[in-house]
Image (cartoon, rainbow, N blue to C red):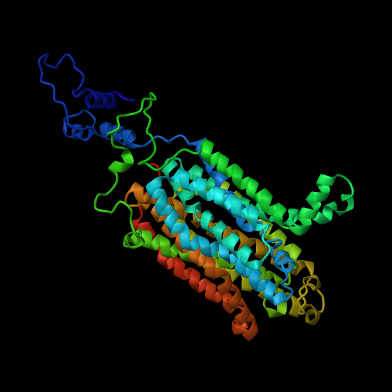
Length: 547
């Protein structure tokens, strides 16, 4: 530090400039009322003092609460595992319960699968408000325990109504997921959220991978023990039990994972609600009971203690985040549904004619890209750009995601008709992928890679939305309710998006609207609407950068 800056520092901290041989010994000290007021005094270097104040105003990076963050991620992964573990076997389960009509199997399986999300929709906001009153930790423990129990008993159902009841109860308890989002916002700040939120964001994709693996590998296990039923009696009884309940084991394993989440929440998770946690000073001494916490000082007394949804929606940026969150979830859910349908549909009907195994590899690649994007790109973006800007750009990517897919079908059709690979195009339009040459296949895979990568870039908007909610609540005590409200809009979108997307695809193919690609244009327009809803967030959002 130069001499001018040193004199400025001395004047700020000591109240007067250092004495020199020209300074009167009895000169009266002038003590400024604040560091800023010292700038009004005579100083050898006004610029040096300003630079010093700028350095003092910058916040140091807060240490990342690693133990709490790891606990939170492990608890968070429970819900996607429980939600997705039924997907590989639910159709067989419905058939096992006596439904033989294939069309009815699809109807009942879809109803069972969606009942979880519908139940979440009905109760997610109420759980969030309860967490504002009773604390985050007890709500998370109750919800995770309920998910564990309902997941384990799901495989014991003997009728379709029982399946629906158990699944609805699982969704009821799983609606506490928004409270976990709130805890993440309360244990981090603007200086360390760039590292915490991306790590937390990968729990959803990882859980969505683990769940189907459990369901697919552990369903109907009695067939694997059929050749050893003559050995121990205990094992024989176990095999007989699994023959009566062939889909109990995957639910049991998923439920045990959920119970581990309950144990972690009980023993390791601290209460984060500002009004209920016990503040500790640096020397470990608990402050006086009548002291006021920092978060309480930030509360606006003009707002009610427990806000209603109408109160929150009256705040422009919260309303924009809720409505654009609905559009964001519609983009994400619809893309997965449309991508699978598009890849499976014959080329002449507007698709790519990929076999199921290839579609599975593509979806696995999507999960890999999502994880890498969250871990490596998201922290860089959050440190360099405002979260509102990231959110707006990611929302603007989604129209391109939907418009890329029809271009791939056009490439496949052109390669077939005009013989780009040197084979008879009329035969290859039949819709079989193996009738397309390697050159066109390579182009198609590059296009698929571009579409999937763009979709994961658009998915960065999810953690950006969580950060924007955290930084724009009118007072800290509203964080739980606000998270619950935005998640409610996302759950509502999740309930209707899959059916809407599949219906749009079917209508487009049946009536050959826009060459069978009307679904892509429709969803691109919806994505543009979502971007339009998010466009004002940048101008009204608080800064999310640490300095």
